[in-house]
Length: 317
Length: 301
Image 1: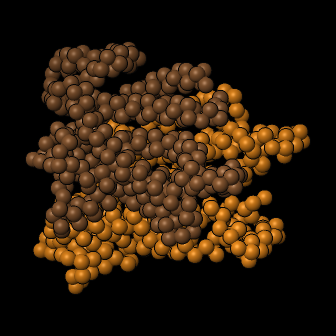
Image 2 (image 1 turned 120 degrees about the vertical axis):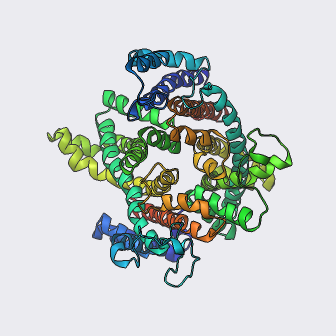
Image 3 (image 1 turned 60 degrees about the horizontal axis):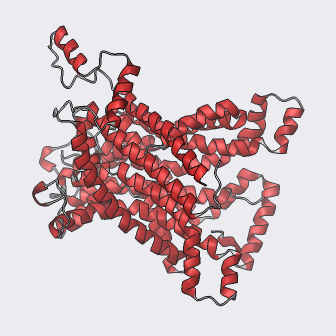
C-alpha cells in the first residue's frame, strides 16, 4: 500500500509538469503579441525590444518555460500587465474567497446529497426516491449561472431579503465570518451546491442500494443487528466511492466557479479570471489557471491516497 | 436500477422483449424499447420541436431578431404584438428565442459530434494497438483530466479570444479526452475477445478487423456516453457566451441573451429568465433522453 502511495506521488509529478506546460502554452495560443497590453501601438522598435527583454520574452521558448517553472515553484508568478502588481498576491486573496465559497457549497451540497441519496436507497421506490431522482437530474441539467440569476430575482429583487453582489457590505473583498458577510455567501453558495448535490445524490443512491442488496447485509439482519448498526456498516462500505466523487466535485467547485462568481461579483479566482480575460492580462490568466489546476491535481492525489487507506481491497496498477 | 424485475408481468414482458431482440435485430429492439419509454418520447418530441423551431425560425418568427424599436424597450410578457415581451433594445423576445436556438443547439451539438469522431478514433487506435500508442494517447488525455472541464474551456477560449469558431474549438478540445478514454476502455475489452483472434487467424489485417469487428461493438457505448455530454456542452457553450467568450452581440444566442438581459433584472426580471429557461429545458431533455437511450441499449446478453 505504501508502495502505491509513493508511486502515486511520483506519478503526480509528470502530470503537474504537463499541466504547467499547458498553462504556459496558453500565452502562445493567444493571437498577437502577449505584450500588446503594455506596449503602445506607436512605440519605437528599441522600446519594444527593451520591454520584451524585461519580460524575458526574447529568449527561446524552452528557456522561458524553465525559468517560469522555477519562479512559479518559488511562488513568483510574474507581474500583471494590467496593474503592475505581482500576480501571486491578487490570486492568493481571490483564492481564499473562492475556497470559502467552495467549502460552503460543498457543505450544503454534500450533506444534502448524502442524506437524500441514502434515504432514496433505503426507501427505494417511494416519494423520497422520486424526489432524489428529480434533484439528481435537475442538478446536472440546470445552467447554474441561470439558477443564480433566478435566485437573485426572487430573493434580492422581488423579496429584498439577501444581497446579490460582492462578498461583504460595500463591496468588501475581505471575507470575515460575521452575519453581514454570511448574508452575501448564501445565494452564491446555494446556487453552486446544486451540481454536486445532484451528482452526490445519484452516486450515494446507486452505491447504497447496491450494498443493501449484498449478502452480508442480509446476514447482518439475520443476526439481529439493530438498524443503526447496519447503517454504520453500509456507510463504511459506501465511503470510498462517495469520497472519490466528492473529491472530484470539490475540484469542479473550485475550477468551475467562474460563472457563478461573475453573476454575484464574488471576488474570487473566477471573477479575477474573467477580469484577466477581458484585460488580456496573460500572466494573470496563466497564474490563475496554474494555481487552480495544481489544486485539482493535489486534490485528485489526496482522494486516491485516502481511498486506498480506507479500502485496502482497492488494488491499483 | 432495473425496474422491470419488480413484478412477474414486467418480467414476462422483459423476456418477450429479449426474444424479440433475437428476431428483430439490435437497433430495431433499441428503437422499440425507446418508443415504449414515455419520458424519452416526450423529451425527443420537445427536442424535435426545438430543432424545427430553430431551423424554420425565418418562417416562424413574427419579427426580425436584429431589428428593434427603442420606444418599445423591455415591454412586459403578454404585451400585444410581443407576447413574450421585448429585450433591452426593443427586439421581439419570441423571435430572438427562436433564432437563438440555431446557435445554441449548434454550439451544444457540434463540439460533441467532432469530439466523438476524433475521440473515438484516438480511443480505437490506443485500445487496439496498445503498447506505445496507448501510452502516448492515454497519458496525453491524463493531462487534460487534470483540469476541471469548465476551467479548461474558459482558459482556452479566454486565450484564443471571443468568437464562434474559438468557442467550438475549445469545447471540442474539452470533450475529446473523456470520449477517447471511454472508447479506449471498450476497445481494449473487445480486442481480447475470441472473434478478434479468429479474424486475425483468418488473415484479416488490422484495418479490416477494426472496421468489421471492433467498430460496431465500440460505437454503441461511446455513443451513449457522447449523448450524455450534449447537455454539459449546451450549458458550457451558453456559459461561454454568457461570459462574452462565445458568439458576438448582434447574433441571437441564448447564453448571450442571458448576459445582456442580466442588466435589466430590476426592470423586467421575468424576461431575462426566458433564455436560461430555454437552455434548461433543452439540457434537461438531452439528459433524460440520454438516460432513456442508455436503458434501451442495455440489452442483457
